[in-house]
Length: 239
Image (cartoon, rainbow, N blue to C red; front, side, top):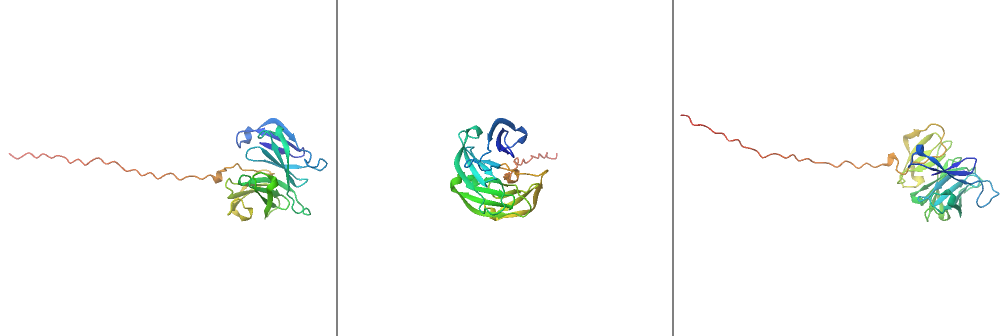
């Protein structure tokens, strides 16, 4: 696991038991990301980080240039082996608008990329013909959210449900078409308050609401009936 510390441009690596923050320990590995890899003179403000499923590729979202940069790791999940893969994706499709990307989310095994903009309250969806390869990303559609701010987006493991982080509240949406943001319908009354103000979130791949319980099998018990015993009655003759 890795995290971006705001203001320093540095990525820190932590080890932990699966999805248990209470076990997180800093490994001593970090990576300074204070310069745009394509233009050292440009401002650089990394605000989010994501990995592919194998830890061989890392993606950095830069708020200053509105760009996602792709890095390769020589050894899976090892920050000290990372190098710029010379691949990037500009995500501000309308440079004149007030745009501030806050999160990147992968879906459908790396076939979909979603970029959240906290100011326009939207999520842009991209399709990738090669999994986790930014060079193949093509814009598809945008979903706008009602409200004041949006910081993060997560999906269920099968892409049928979407969770929106609006700072102090999670909202749930049903997706009638898997992984397609424009098919989202807000589930009325299905929201969760969280203490403090969130700045991005992620659900583990199999969250509790998505677990399918197989009904218990029906067991038919046939009682064993002992054979009927006919008693023998002896009648003594009258003398």
